[in-house]
Length: 485
Ligand code: HEM
Image: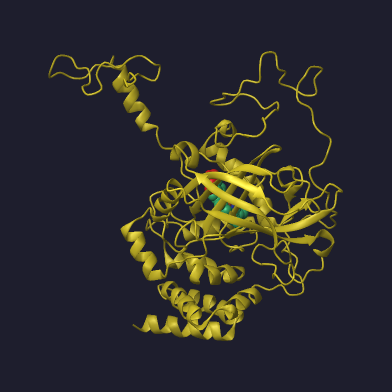
């Protein structure tokens, strides 16, 4: 078959792609060489700002299929009948390192899912951990600064990591999770995904429920030890990317089963844990897992930059029947993501194929801006209300209203009867086998012992002591031993 002709970006044939045009055989180059100028100028503009967190990731398409009836809890159309399938795009990621980092590191993993539903795109932007380090979005920039590269040394610093945690006792639960066996997943296929936050569901009768999402891997959980992770990260920085890409290319399609924990809205106020505190789980004996459906990934993107790097997930992309809860962290995220997308990708990022709705059309009066490609059709009005055929509101609220009382102010999150920063961290520790405890303690001590200031170490030790006496004693002994070496 004849190969297509190489052209400039405006479609003109290129005569020579090996030699620049010059003034004579040995002379300087000519500014009239459009092909050379265009090629160099485009190359200079190939990179865009990387994500400020979760810069490194891998993505794939697939579908979600409903297996169980949840219509008693949500009116979301894509969950309305057993067997209904919705196309999805999932981007996995590590959090702290930059685009050039390694996959097999101790770090939470992102689990960002876009459902292309007939009622618009629904984004569930979660992690592989059911909890998080902090519970107020005001602390997020400080937290991330402390975990990423130091502005002076240009590398991650145990001093910064542990100094932040010394001031964040609420992080003890997530630290226990991260430093434990699940802290380095063997691959993106072998880990669970969690919505982590509490979300609100609303059913057709207008009743409200609070919900937590759990995607359980059907590949089984597989993790790496600290030693295995270090070896693999050194040998193959792209180990997660290679694994996901090759599995799907081989036709081995990874899948997850979605379960939810459902709390009737009226139970939230008196639950023993603040249900809107992201540093806490809801024990399954309080709210058991209920199966909803199956998520399958079966298609790799054709172009990583276009579809993975330019993918934009925002926790405020909801569909009717699903909405935010009062979780303060979630509320902060409702602003942060689309703002990041406008900076990183531009105001028209929702028109890119990976981000645009696929099962319906976006139909509104937003217009123009850089790189607008979405013509609304000849004569379409750009204001509303109008006397013409433009789109109109439904008048149907997407979610049930929540009753609120109180005064405005910078309040500490409400504390429920069993709320403190340490109880659930201790519960997690006590669930572990002896071998798991030993590895957890060794991982914590390995990092904490590198901290230069004793007062920072002491503050962190106090958190482990508060979680569980045995936990605290062991971490303290291990840190002392390493510091004496
Ligand atoms: C207030 C707290 C948080 C803020 C302000 C925040 C902010 C951000 C920002 C600005 C990005 C980059 C977005 C982009 O450029 O496309 C991002 C990415 C991400 N965040 Fe957060 N984040 C917060 C907490 C969380 C939590 C609690 C989770 C998980 C439960 C999470 C999961 C993710 C994931 C998975 C991504 C990557 C999305 C993708 O694959 O494109 N974040 N976050």
